[in-house]
Image 1 (tube, rainbow, N blue to C red):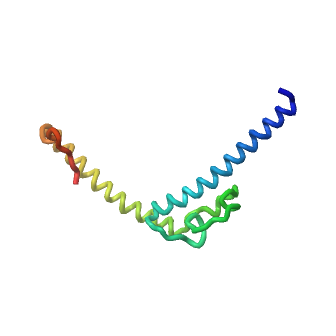
Image 2 (cartoon, one colour):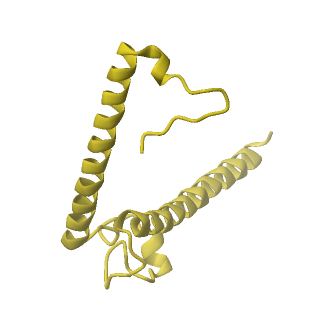
Image 3 (tube, one colour):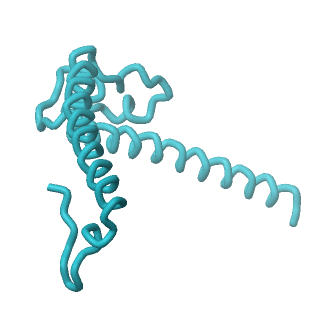
Length: 121
């Protein structure tokens, strides 16, 4: 391959890599916004930050991430929701552990009947 073809191929590869990076940044930020709705359990939008309803394209592809953060209130909401869920997980884990300990002392009681299911409700 001639040196001009090699330079052209390298330039094309760099341009392609840059395009992938820019598209990945924009897609990642859009995905983070949608995950924010799920984590915050809301369809609402904020006036600024990650949960803003509309982000200009230049902001979506900018290397500066400061426009894509959660507000202090949003962070507190995530923490509060997590604490509630952590309590539920702890209660469920305690029930499962208790059930497993009691089934070890009576192994036949922990086996489901054929066609049956086990439930920890």
